[in-house]
Amino acid sequence: MGFLGALPARFRRERVLIVGCGDVGGRVVRELGHGRRVQVLALTSSPARVAALRAQGVRPLVGDLDRPATLARLAGLATRVLHLAPPPSQGLPDWRQDPRTRALVRALARRTAPATFVYGSTSGVYGDRQGAWVDEASPLSPQTPRAWRRADAESQVHWYGRRQGVRTTVLRIPGIYAPDRPGGTPRERLLRGTPALRPEDDVYTSHIHADDL
Image 1 (tube, rainbow, N blue to C red):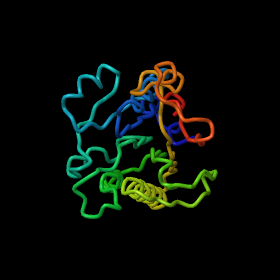
Image 2 (spheres, rainbow, N blue to C red):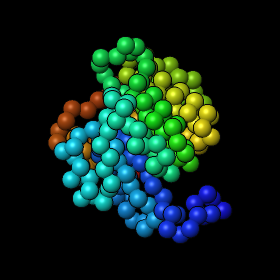
Image 3 (tube, one colour):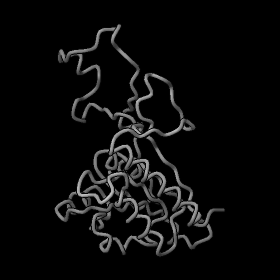
């Protein structure tokens, strides 16, 4: 029996916190909405998004990863955390570090930890492998500031998990596509006459449909 099963029925509802509730986060909300024992919470830095999140059945929490003092209410609030927020792209004292993930895990560490923490990273942390295959065990080789910050965020997530006894999962997400996302699907781009590589110039690339995330 899990820790929720040991509680009275009224307390057994899972509480999933989504940090970075954009397109992919919204798809997760729709998937979780099919169940009856899940309450979805979403952190947003924009008060203007509160009404839209509520309309999706989400409990909005206004807070800013760039202002750690606004994150205090997150501690002990969720049983599961999905972290999809990207690192900042400018104004960093150290371009290799992600202060947003650091602020999040520090806020969560102040009270009872969630059971699981999932972080959406990028396959860019592998660097340019010159066409070679990679898997979860392949060494990281970040070659851009963005990839370095993602690799740093992964390390912080794993450190948080070890320190707090939280099961952590890192998803190294490749290019995302979907009919309702900018750019559409590869088939739609071909139908529009978008230029394509010649077979002899083509290479393997890694993509995933947004709904498969």
